[in-house]
Amino acid sequence: MAENTNKVVTVNIVTPDGVVYDHHANLLVACAIDGDLGIMANHEPIIAPLKIGEVRVKRTDDPDHEDSIAVNGGFLEVNNNVASIVADSAERSRNIDVTRAEHARERAQQKIKAAEAQHDANEIARAQIALNRAINRINVSKHRG
Image (cartoon, rainbow, N blue to C red; front, top):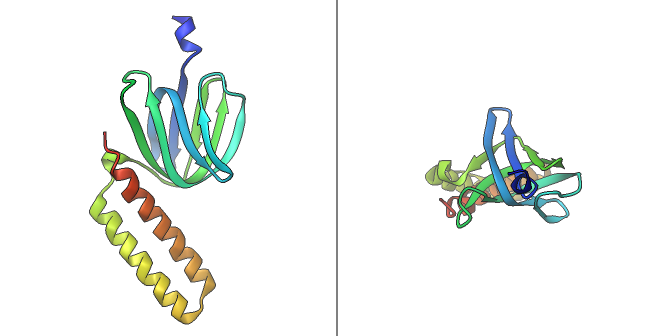
């Protein structure tokens, strides 16, 4: 039993609203600012800022299944076979409201056009972040499991 524990990493994803995800995994892949990170058991301690992207988790209880979670930035900390992600928001693929995400994408695209017409760089940047979040949610929703 102890031998199996050394091959497992616990994955926790937490937002201000509470725990979004908590499972044991063989592999975690997260989108760090400097590139994708693959985390397996016995990984060296690390803290990395995350960008808007998909977190993929290969769970130990079902090796043929991969969970997908839309994460909107945050931080990943790995220490003692625990990978913790703290993010402003995160959503499992099965919980994503695709219609709402598509409307958010449309609103963001409209805001970008309006901001470009006014040459408002700050508003363009804010709308681009909203667009990236909506697109991420739409993409992750396709990986329902």
